[in-house]
Image 1 (cartoon, rainbow, N blue to C red):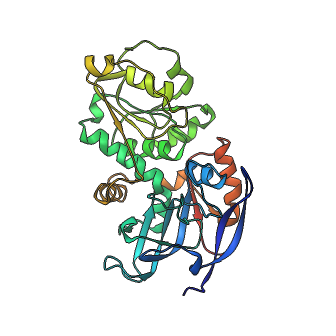
Image 2: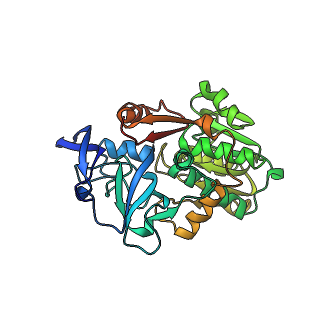
Image 3: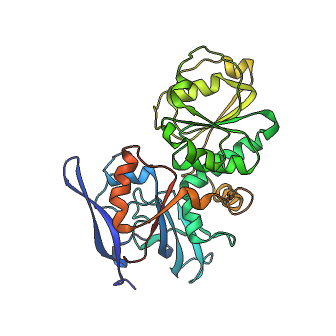
Length: 333
């Protein structure tokens, strides 16, 4: 087994701040230590993978490296009592694809604590159609539900709606009966967002035109991946007892707002982490994705590619030219 060869996307640093990517042959012996060896059938592309693939030091510092924060496949070797050879499993987040060789290789070896059984009502392809983006969206929707947000209370705002987290959040909320307002800078994607179940699509610029500490009450809940002024506006225009969840920072890392929405309207701001959240929390989210959260439109927001196409799609993602989810079929081309 140590001499088993496989294909992987490998990122190498050619000189300071210069990186190149290529598909290379690796061996299982090249993989890090871990209790579970998994043959990866499908992976997916996330913005964090694009950052890792281009040498962003906030994601990956040691090269050569194989990105891929998501993987679904079959256990081929295990020293853990929790998993047996032949088990269908998912591995996402933690250090996978960041400091540990990730799912854009046909094999990964990881700690058993990073692995969970593939829900029986999900295929490996469907699991990667969700991936970390779907896990994050499910955690955010669960946070809204756990804090009492119900469809009858009014619309839920989803920012960054054409991205992985945003598009899945739109689809999940619509399936649960919510009225969903999708915010995007790509109004040409309005038909796509409406097909996922959005009730309304608005230009993201409309969330930046009013800086008053309190604005007219609009949102029963918010799913935000943009941060910065967009998040501030969402907080300021939330309803009384509104719930705002945030998980991303594609717009900015700073948040400037006032205390008024929190003390005069009881607005709650909840940060969502899908990297280090407990296995119990992520298992609950995956069970929801395999059940009530699973939208019929999942195939419509998913594009399947091969490993050879990853470079093209990662660069499109960095350029803001992608939408929905991209699943990588890891079988040899």
